[in-house]
Image (cartoon, rainbow, N blue to C red; front, side, top):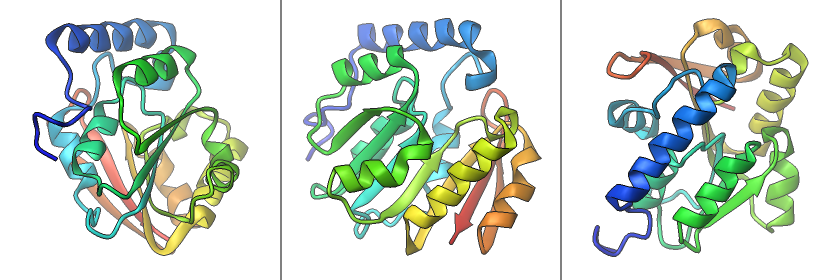
Length: 200
């Protein structure tokens, strides 16, 4: 598939609509988004760096928002793979369904807590990777623990959960759930972001 053929490429007007929708939702839900603009290309590249695109067949993304990371995943994703995105914001769900036409993408209106149920419903095996930028530091501790525990259980044994956050507060919880956590940092983002690669 060439760059011209990729269904995830946006026209200028669609890009403006994407930024406008993201900014509007930031003012509605600042604790959920954390930034007034989507993730920078530098952060997206650093976050997705560990993924083995040749072997990955199931990737799950939590909180795709307007699809900044979603589109980059689709641009690299194997033709036979599936990307499942879980989003609780109905405006974002509608935008993703309207703006991305790709048979490998499954847009689910729901919580990250339902990952295993959604994989089962879609008839998919365990995930190779879970990508997450949802605000773990501001959610209730019991909810955070359920999502992290459920994510670990939904991963292949050799899989990984790739997390970016604007606060380091989630690190102790990650280390409690996962056997190994690698830490990184991306300064070229607004705001700068912590990156964590978590292995079951």
